[in-house]
Length: 192
Ligand SMILES: [Fe+2]
Ligand SMILES: [Fe+2]
Image (cartoon, rainbow, N blue to C red; front, side):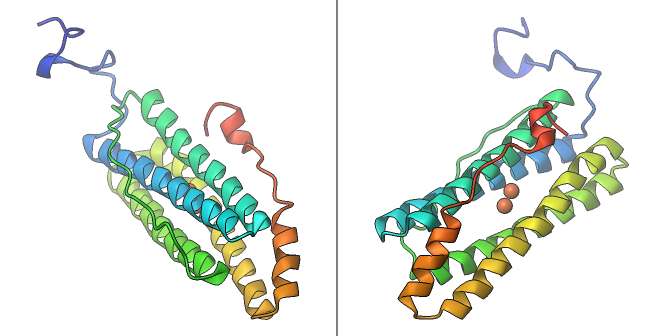
């Protein structure tokens, strides 16, 4: 059967020149899904922030959404660059309502800790499979996760200080309104 027509005969045009093991390709595909879910989750938090009148929080979460899309696309590009096959799966539905700004940031931190564990497991797998390229590629994510958890912890600390003080919350909202999305240098250059 002609490979371009269909069925199980379809093979990568780089068959025989695949840089990724099946195991690594599968794990990276799952990570694309997790990053897409992260984007979706923060989009939901942005929408909810707008709904309750906190435009600065909405901005912060929308910038976070954009960052997560970059995380997903960097892995997407990497799988393609290495001759692997992209397999997109359904993205889980995020919550639509949250109890408070603190609730959103606690859930954000909890989710980022889950992502950090996932990245660490990917690094473990790359080392076990002796896949040096993937190991190096993942280092960017290891560093990124330190920054993300740090940011979340910082905002949680501020929210604790603010407590039930409405003025404090509005001041924090103003601060979060100033966050600007910047494309990471490695993504601009077309991947890590
Ligand atoms: Fe991410
Ligand atoms: Fe993240």
